[in-house]
Length: 452
Image (cartoon, rainbow, N blue to C red; front, side, top):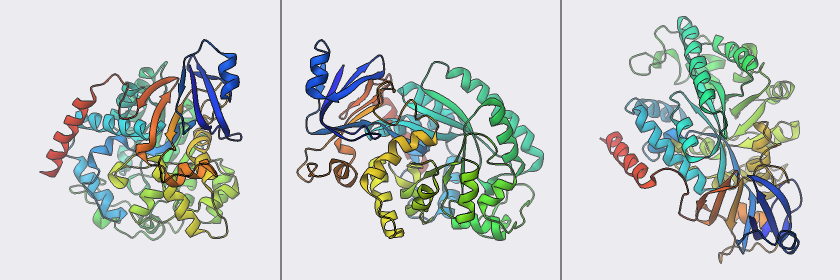
């Protein structure tokens, strides 16, 4: 199979004008100018996308596909109120609801050019959904317990699920990881136990950290909306006994002190409220960073110091975060919002469109330590490829086609999404082994229940 288009963005090398890609056995077998590729492989079927760009699929380091059903239902709230509202609504959902919600989220992701997702779950519904859809994913089993007496039980339950999930994923595009719950919902012993288990079992770790000012104040001063007087078990389900005292350190320092970064493959999500010393510690531990510009802005969390991360040499990528916050799983919007926010936030370093494309592709792959397989269009890598239309009247790709993708493209411009050489999405049509209409009907039913 040969794919061709006006532009090809390999990401790790210069763009190709009038190029083509040979896909064979799920991998990229050759890449070059269109005439040469077609001449070398005359028997291969050719699909020409015309005035479009072929590029590696987007790597979404952090989303919550199970929360898709909640989008629009918890709107216009700052982070602390938003997260508590999401928790309250989540108690009304059953396992089957989470699954159908994750399916719809996965379909949205494919339609926006996302081929790989990182997702944190305690239910496992997103695992079943991504397996059914054929997406590439890293699914992290969340583990948390605020009460010290429940820590070992929480770890035992997580280990049991992880063993089962890993068995279910043999021979698929899905990896399993582990994720400690947020600081304000976790006994500190969990962080060290997670690191030990991840090291022993060779599991990637993802942890949401330093995301909001409320979390920072909670750790530093023992105050904020997450303080113990707002965390009674009846309404929040966090604790039975108030366990929290201020520690006088940043969230990063707190997590570091409890061994949260001791595993060999750790990724921190958000990383908004930290200082230069925190960044140095993350560099020492080779911690990857997932920044989520849209949700951080939407929920009033702040702007992560992306330029400082890159200057320090950290592995950095992008995440779309929960659809309950951003209302869409959309990497194109994520890149554009991130570009504008960081240009405004740090006028000393001007980020360009090519950099944002790198973060959304090879940057995410490096953060997951999967850059040898995905994230760029290189011979031998998995054929995770997307096509984006550049023919609209508002677009002028002739001068800078990468800028046109980041600054002018939207979801409606995604023409095709391919994972492992299999086309899973083609302009308003999904080639997946599920009844899309049935999943949509189920989500409508669930949303009706949530609004009641």
